[in-house]
Length: 355
Image 1 (cartoon, rainbow, N blue to C red):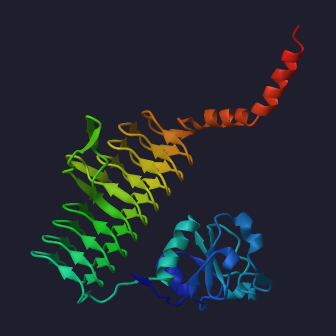
Image 2 (image 1 turned 45 degrees about the horizontal axis):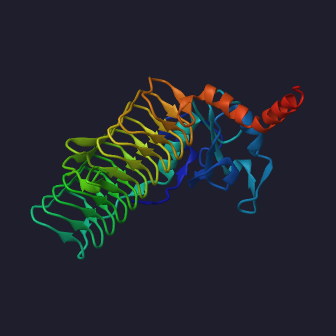
């Protein structure tokens, strides 16, 4: 969906956010921004009142180097922590300024759903069911038995194969592929090039020849999940590969067959999860992180960038390294590695003194 701009007065924005405010009620606000990108009509936020020195005062001038213009404090608004001293500025007061700023961004830059259409170049198989207010773009292919929920948007070149199910208010960006019988929940976003339901890497060898194991399961993606560009989620061998509700997966991630990823995971780019791994809720994986096959990872586990989880991990662990271990232990090991040359020189010096 395309984002458009909407102008709100400071008072209107405060009312819609249900927040108290100070300053000029009629100030017209046109966009959300960061403090380093202030322009007239902008709404920024401060996580802490200690950052007030970077905000221009109503009488002061702030030079914005990004846009080569001078900004006065009475031309902008800032969402600040509740209890911050106003001093005549255009402030909105929130207990969580980040949350309030995200909501303000959605109000000032609302999504515009396109009018329902099925493009004339789209190809629809037999028994395809399409809900109300669905937008289907050029060269989309919907195989036999595909079902598309109300309000969903399918951009150019996407393919939904036989008996795939897409829920309500989803958005599939260009060249997404959802393969046979896979189930996509409501409000799911699949970024360009993602592939849902390809065969898992299942093979065995006989007499030196690789033999393929049929992959007859599905992928089930629950509500409010986002899958990044060129990310792949493989179908299960027999049952379901599952991405549970609220999880957000970055670009170029590989989720292997039979994996279960718990609710509200955050998985960064170029990470990989091996087959049949079972992951609890609120997983956080840094970039280029790996989880080997057949391990169990508990709830609220964090793995720092480039670490590899090779054994079962209990709840609420923070790990790093390869193989992974508690992050405090890993940091000590890394510090020692950086001293290896010094330690080696000391050892050589000691050896030279031996009779």
